[in-house]
Length: 310
View (tube, helix red, strand yellow):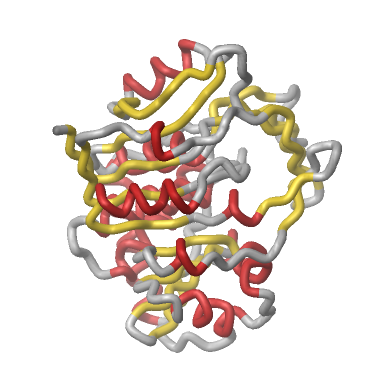
């Protein structure tokens, strides 16, 4: 039986990224399984991925993941289909996202048999996962984590991405750790107040609710306490694609060691900063450097533990 620390379920993507920071558009491997798994590997977690890709998925991406120690035990190639792909355009501090191709859905029958994970991270990006898949994953994992972005997204005829309300009781009642961005949790709950939105998710039985806020850091709700985690200021800003997934992967890799969620969130923020310093799913910081950044953030958190202005 295969055993893992963190298994991420969702579509890999091939992203084309346009940014004023690049001379030319960049094509890069993307998707939550890539960023979450590679971030977890930086902390020596045993990481695996369950996904579906098209026959156009390049060997170079498979090699990259293998070389970094990510187990692709649950990746299936759908013949005569395209890998999910997005066009991302950054301008004036904002991102426009457009779906170009979408790989086939992941069904319960696509899940490998005979594996166990300390954490299974459910991370759809384009509606490719159903509640039935979540039901099956619950049987294989001690802890179930969720990034609901793929449940929340809606696409117009040109593939442009918007957000919709989504609160699936069947899914959320099985979740232990929830992570989303501020716009996503507001869309999910229909509430503008951050605290109210986080409480609404918590009320489904979720133990830890995390909301990432970019350069404003993150907010963590656990044991009835709201904790504001500062962001680590990157040395340079190259590409923010996948920063939230990097946060999640690092948080979960540390959380399996029964660490304080505040410390885990500082680890997440540190790895997210390393992510934005590079382009694509590449992380420059090694474990020792990640810990140094996290220690600086934890010290800052302890000095300013007032939690006002959430």
